[in-house]
Length: 266
Image 1: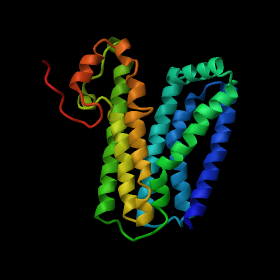
Image 2: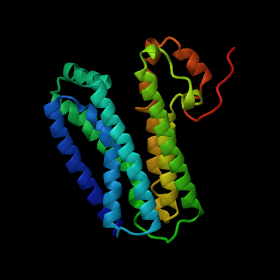
Image 3: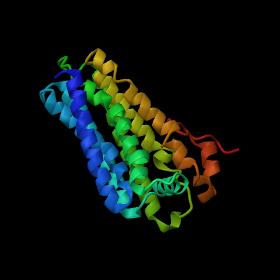
């Protein structure tokens, strides 16, 4: 399938789905569920690309299965968390500020600040599983297998990290405390590190298919920047020190992103 045709198909599908979700958000008055669509929407694009390009080939299959596994796992977890804990205070603050300071209605604010922003970001991050399915170079080679391994490690890493955090928060005795055991002993954000590993692994698989796959490099670069400099680490750590007194000591000892043995206490 031609490159532009595939990208146009996925863009049109993403636009239709985001508009549909925005319409649902107008009824719920809470855009928090869009976080769950971040992963699920990419799984949809991976599956659509797989079918559109012939539904065969080792690289296409590897890209699709890994992306769908990642997207369904992450999306399901974030939707469950939303249902358990209710509206995300980040979105509530954003909507209130847009309406109070800019005079925007809820519909316009949620469209421009949430849905219209996430759609292009999702599309760019997902480039490896789109462009990586255009060509079929045959069996997986060493680079692709390295990508499968890295993506698999990332998927396990973030899944275990999320499970450890859920279990920690479920214990009332841990209220106000900091999780510094398990994977969280080696990185303050094992879930984000796992995310980055998944997408760099998918890019390696795509890169083995030729120049189009290599050209999908903006995908893993963007997700890494979002996780480390954008809506990931800075957003989470912005106010957590005020709510958890031990967090500053945890920051001083624990790597911010890449897993590393904790520093010794002074």
